[in-house]
Image (cartoon, rainbow, N blue to C red; front, side):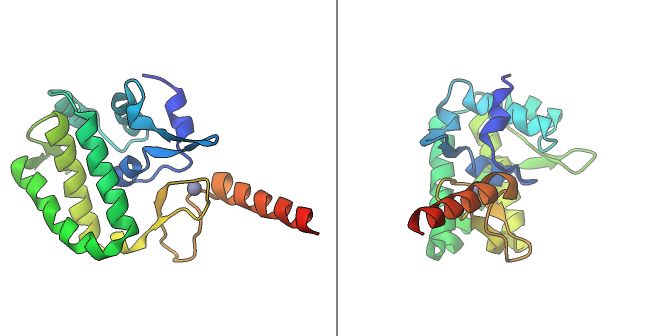
Length: 186
Ligand SMILES: [Zn+2]
């Protein structure tokens, strides 16, 4: 478990699937795919535990099989596209049920979903289950991409007015950039 993993994230959501979508971002000036790094998926899972988003029981189950990084990346990249080009979103939502059907989930005492299989199938089922719930509760409609040209993060805009995933990171950076651009042009 590395400790620098958390510095990658400008914003941490309460939703597992949003944090998963955000495993690719611009780090310094280069696009960085966190899943491609050594132990990338393991580090991300540890980080989710630390943030209280995944429980140890869920992780214990996931660890029963190996996670195919390529498959997880494909799922992530597909969904990043669906959220950016919403005309395909409805069909995509229907396809999520396939994962939860293939790998049924059960619930622990605090009603956290535990996949019946570990590894890739388990993680896809957990993400799909959460995404189906989020789409039904209207969360997908509030999902936005950060306005900063240097950020790839998605976030939930509850007020309908938020532009940046994080005011501290992206908001301030963007304000500084605009201020500087104005100074140059005057
Ligand atoms: Zn951002």
